[in-house]
Amino acid sequence: MVSRTNIITAISLLHNPELNDIILPHKTVKRKPYKRRRRNKKWITANHRIKFPKVRVLNETGGSLGIMSTKKALTQAREQQKDLVLITDKAKPPVTKIIEISKFKYQQQQRRAKNRKSARTQDTKEVRLTMFMGESDFAARLRRVKRFLKKGDKVRLTLHFKGRQITKKDFGYELFGKVIAATKDLAKVEIEPKIMGRKLLAQLTPATD
Image (cartoon, rainbow, N blue to C red; front, side, top):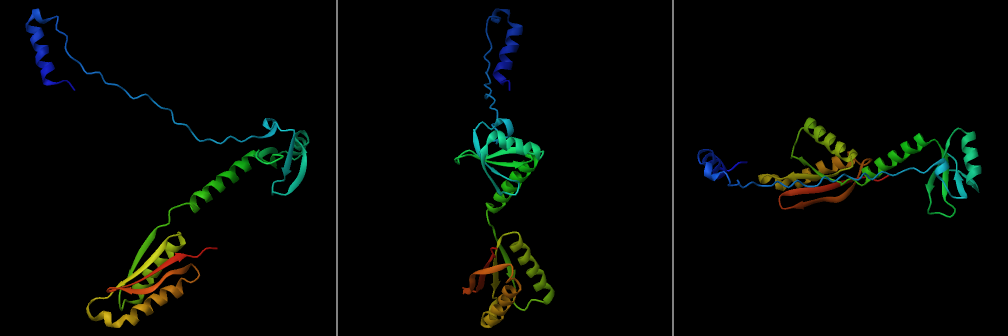
């Protein structure tokens, strides 16, 4: 942006020829050097790119075909109209698999997606219940609890006792018991129902297979 001082100086130069030798100050804008992002792309080593003299060979389902020369393994792969893919070069001898590259890539993508899903941060969702709630309201809250559990989230059940409701704690425990019984196939009780102040609390966590 041109400052007000620079504008005034420029006007002065136009009306005063003697000031023509004055050089207007200017600000140099330095641009940040462009950095190309590096993609963490994992290359698949297969067929003629496998340079090891001998390899352990697996079939498409993971069954062992034994140790053989890479040349022989390539021949077997070609006879089945498939590829010889390097699984790991850390073993001795390196492990390969006879499988189509496209199918191997798909399996790798599925495995990475599964790993990302299992590594997802587990959230804790709160579902509030109320004393003497109607059947339709209870059913709606129960559906919400089940939905959260199926997504892999923990569920914290809370019930706030208002006024003299604190004297009817058994109703609260009974309500929590109904939720726990209805979700026994989806969850296990991480925190048993307990009173904290004027609240009844419990926590469910998704059941592991």
